[in-house]
Length: 146
Picture 1 (tube, rainbow, N blue to C red):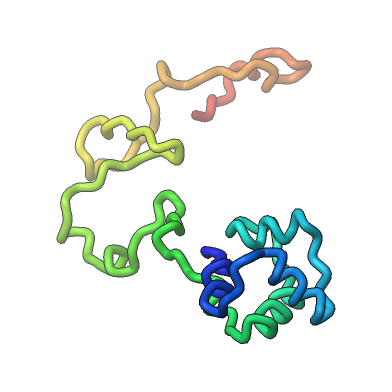
Picture 2 (cartoon, helix red, strand yellow; picture 1 turned 180 degrees about the horizontal axis):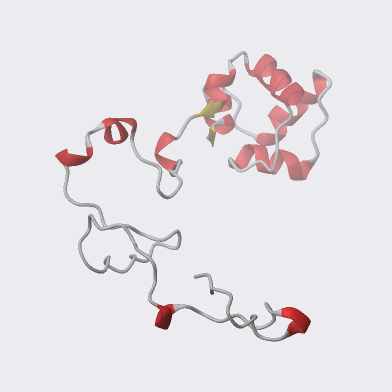
């Protein structure tokens, strides 16, 4: 959102922040010099809704004149797709490279793409220490899990 107080005030013949500050005080809204500086410069730290009511009443304008939307500044979260893209069939576009959450590519699948992973050979099984009784290696004779 863009704060547009200065232009709204200028459209009504108010050219100085001190003049607007006096007018606001006349309606019961006492604004400090620091806050008035932020309001006038276009970068207020905060504006309460009741303050916004008084500003609109003094200027004789609506909120839409003070707060201008800037949709171009809104960024989409990473991975967020357009609704039209999400509804498109998967076969219509180019192949998609799987990615990890950190954005790196996943390694290509080994073997054929349509194969399901089978049991691992014994050479690929990992022994984890401490799985046997008394904190020793696994009990001899029991199968190791992948």
